[in-house]
Length: 360
Ligand SMILES: NC(=O)c1ccc[n+]([C@@H]2O[C@H](COP(=O)([O-])OP(=O)(O)OC[C@H]3O[C@@H](n4cnc5c(N)ncnc54)[C@H](O)[C@@H]3O)[C@@H](O)[C@H]2O)c1
Image (cartoon, rainbow, N blue to C red; front, side, top):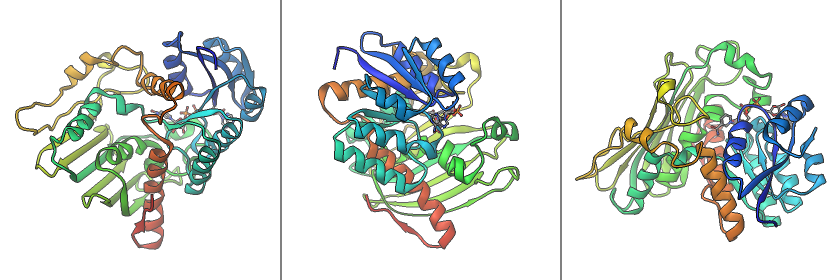
């Protein structure tokens, strides 16, 4: 491998730009070599915009052409698995947009391919690099919440209208989106919950479509969780709240009794610290560790994106480090798998009326 890690991007729609912005900010470490999209016009325009050498009509063609070390998979979620597996078979590492896959069987195939071929796999969860999110992790690692998490809550309180679902043909359908507020909007919040509270052993949930009759998928879901640690958790997600309240959030109670929260409220555009989303910087509104105070939105915005243009850049930089140092990335494929298992557990328990055991 040369001194720069060579990236290919599959799916050159909206979020691919966040990957490109992040990679373009690290010109000594990364280059975008090739891109692929079933819409060739879109692939070419993206290649021109980001100075990629080649544009292809499929992931397979791009991967067969070689010359890349890592593929960023930015297609709709039910289409994430195949490019990752094709890449692993060719010894190419992968960064996969959230959720890792839609179906759990696809997540199994992805982890198997990665293990078989020894490639690095990182499931995108860029919000872990929010200053307020990192601060909770450090507090847990430093034992400031006690020796375990006893209660965790994860919430997504958003609004999505008909225009949003009509924007792209894949949105709003079980076969092409794989799910609704849990599958699309909540993976970040679920990942936070599991990152802080550890793996879950059982989940029971309900989903419903209450006020989005023009889509098949759920617009509201709730679930209860038992963690391996013995702690308990709640997940709730809605895209029925207009205006949106907290688009991402988690709160964690430790065995010491102390509570920390990560809150991403809707923030006006002029206050945004990040180019990739509506309010992509979190605060710690609840922080009851003795002698400490929470991180306010102003403080968090002050820390901004910590020297990089967006939070995707942080995760991509970590993946470059993982490749060079031959270590696990900060967010692994297994982390992504566990999020998919939670989401599918909610769908399954609604179907069967029974709790679902989570095994890994
Ligand atoms: N991390 C985040 O904060 C974040 C934010 C938005 C979206 N996402 C994720 O990114 C993924 C894409 O979302 P988006 O909003 O960019 O969607 P999009 O519709 O804007 O872009 C998807 C692109 O994939 C292309 N595509 C579809 N099938 C393909 C195939 N078989 N091969 C190659 N290209 C194909 C489409 O033509 C399109 O250009 C989703 O999984 C979504 O959950 C993550």
